[in-house]
Length: 433
Image (cartoon, rainbow, N blue to C red):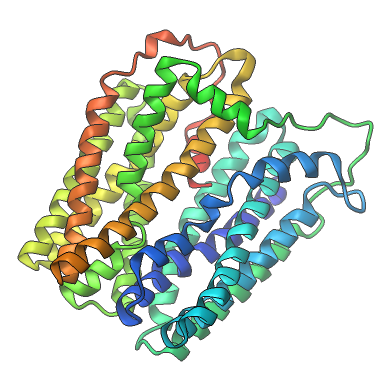
């Protein structure tokens, strides 16, 4: 069973690897070096979240339509190929947009669209396969293996790209993306090799699936759930709205190279992982609400420190802010996912989890586009790039403060805890997916 868990982990790693160069390196190059609109970059980078409702359709279709006796492998393979094609073509689209915008935009929509569709197509399929192969008792270990491998791969990929683009040239960046794409494809194919057993029509039952309409009803039918939804929207929009802006900000404020800003992802990821491990220790001794607030406040302080670093032009203060933001994000993610699983009912656990996953994706989409759009508006109004970035961070700190106040209104006693919760790592993996 360990071999199969490791193979599933390799697939998870392969897809996560394609995420790093686009969300970590290319966004900085497009905004800083190529002077493209941060709003445009945010929209392109958010396509996986914009396309995330397609997971409902993909999951239901793959349940009932095996191909050559395989229900998940064909969709995982198709998704992986789209991810790889998207990531290796994205630099060409970016450079074309900087010289010939309209043709470049069309190529960019194609490249980022392939990547976003591949991300959704593969992730829903390999998580379904992981659940089917592991069974109820082994699911926690499988997800723990997948999540650990994913975090390590993100850190190592960021470090590897930073070395490949030093010194930065368009050729070096393109070569780095090809290397990441080729590595991801190789690891993914190794993971798929003899992994899925042939599907038998009389063995087991298809997983239950839910429509988007059903998930929206879940989010609107109960007053406590409605408050939590808006809290989650504010929280994730605040914390994740900086995704496409943090590295361009570091380049603008401190003159960091592409290599140096790419390593920000590895630093942030390291402290997210440390926070998740700390949450595992604290969760049994501190209430979920308090643990969530500690993480939220930590992230808020991180934003305030980053804002201070922009005014003082202190790189050391900036790194302290990154550490606090990473640790606060990790702690907040795990604690708030615990709250998510508390807000379920025994008869509709899967439906509620699907609804929270849907709202999670929509919050990421709103946060990314909000951050990119506000940066562009403030830059145009003030004529100062740095002011645009700092204005976004101030706005996100305000949203985070409102979310902290809203958490106090959520009455957890309204829901009884009758369901068996997933493990700590499963919760973190759901957020990462």
